[in-house]
Length: 258
Length: 157
Image (cartoon, rainbow over all chains, first blue to last red; front, side):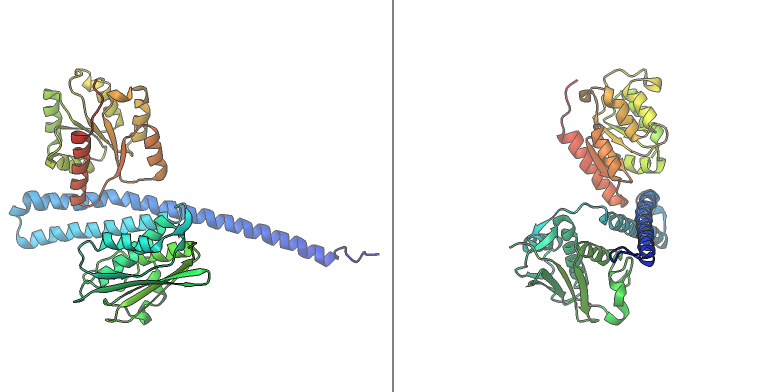
């Protein structure tokens, strides 16, 4: 006779199956983590190895420009300058890739962050020429890691300054609000904006750019880093914009203590 | 940019303010050019790897004839080098009294966290990431020379 609370044969079989599944899942998870770490160390070491030849290309192109420039015709000097600036551009991409790859490894020291002070500090450093008008309102505190959240402001304010660079009166407004357990931040500019249809999901992807390099230079790493940092904080980030009508970037983070 | 000339000038006067320990001749050429352009720097001697740097500091091998008069103030040290690399050199120098050594500034292409930590642990004074941009390399070398050759004070021998 079988007792009521004793598992049946099929239940025992199911439990054994569940255990096997759990073990398999755990193993997959470990493999995936190992693979990710391997990829990150691979990409960072490849990036590091690329820096040295790039330094040589840019450096020696400049040596020729400086020491032998007077022997070369104007068009030749132009070519040399292209070699130098392109090597530097690639250097920027490589450096961006390295810092992006290192983001995940950075230890997060999470505490209440005074976002008003942080945004003001970043803004005054980036806008030291005073070319753009930056209005920063009172921002609610966030709970997070100050060093990486500083990077978020650097990328977003840096972008706003860059993309309003051609406006007659560039204006950047930073504001914030509280919504339950979240603090929401918004940075709106009156710059060139972007096409929401063509940007789509790619806006926050690595190496994706919405503008040609000769219009607005960039590495395609900024918003990817923003996305990664905000996601690490279990937050959200989104954007709205239209061509010629500015852009607004918003992000939500866990609220800090007031 | 004739580097053997520089080495000879040094050997004849017995004074080198800056030692450059670098196995990549292209990097060495650019760094020496920057040092020579810097208003803060004096003579520079290029040592091609950690082994040669050890010979120099110990007045050994091809540097056996040097007397103590030529004390280097600053060593710019690459980390990745064949045979005796930067960390090996720092390790070998651990038996040398710190006061007898030049200031050691690591200049590396790859600021890998573990290497940076190890370099400081082994007594490096500073760690700098070699810039890619020529202008930035010049200003970095300027800053380094200004600080370590003009402002910094070493212990009297």
